[in-house]
Picture 1 (cartoon, rainbow, N blue to C red):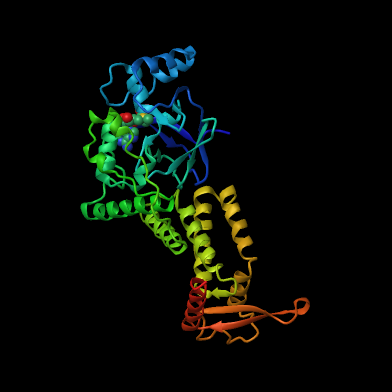
Picture 2 (cartoon, helix red, strand yellow):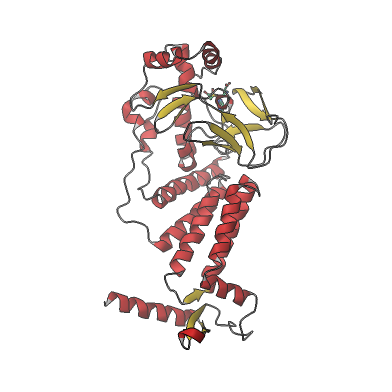
Length: 383
Ligand SMILES: C[S@@+](CC[C@H](N)C(=O)[O-])C[C@H]1O[C@@H](n2cnc3c(N)ncnc32)[C@H](O)[C@@H]1O
């Protein structure tokens, strides 16, 4: 199949990758395999190490490396300048891709890199990209949670350019809001993953000279959370994260955030096997719907992600709580006025002998529901 992009000049950025036809979200724009590969190390690579790996390549591969962008940093050799401007660091290797290396950076990217274990990578559109528009990825996954000032320092130190993407070029008042959102994103994202928020303060001292120091390289060490998040916190943090990511137009992680908010709220509700809280079911449904909509618009309606979320949601609906919720929504409960005015929760139970028991349902007001839950809590804590 013809590739939907061409590599051509991008104003003020050297070369760039541009869409030659409209690219719907979820489309694989480009596939690439590393041309140069070095084992990952904590300390900086020396010129000799990079040269040794380069010398192993055949002539054609060497030529492909040497035609890449040199960046703007003052390393001694052209090879090192190219390596520094184009390498991607993974857990075990640092690699240079011949085609992906032509993609410029934006803090609000319209494409993302999906890399397999064998280090082949795909660039996938995460937003609709119109014909003639430039394709952007983000050079640093942590930028989602960094203020514009810290992104500026990082890009200047490691790449030597000033980003003018829509997030970095916001008017001052909007920038303050964007910075606040991104700092919150960093806190919520870290806590959801079970870590204390990363300490980005070292970046404030980052300069092109200090960038190569080891102390700067290991600044993202993460401390596990002292107290794990509770279920209500998990649901709330994921919901806030989803909303903040959307406000920042950072679409890639929105799907997981909405899905996880729904999952943890459902988990919380299912702790009471016999109580169906209507508002919880409504929220679980609303957030799963948003996750599915986001996956459909980012990955495409036929994508594995959108399908697996749809399957997951259908499976959740086979649980008694959602069955009862759906019945109440469809007015299928025996008494049509059943939930009127007391529509906070439904208590479900079984009545009669096991072989012919019937499902019973009792409407609960907010006060009744809270009293019932508190009574149970007291019983559990007195055990
Ligand atoms: C991996 S290369 C990207 C492709 C490169 N523009 C080229 O000509 O091959 C990284 C270099 O591209 C340039 N670059 C990338 N994103 C940029 C941006 N948003 N603004 C200005 N320059 C950018 C910088 O010179 C950076 O060192």
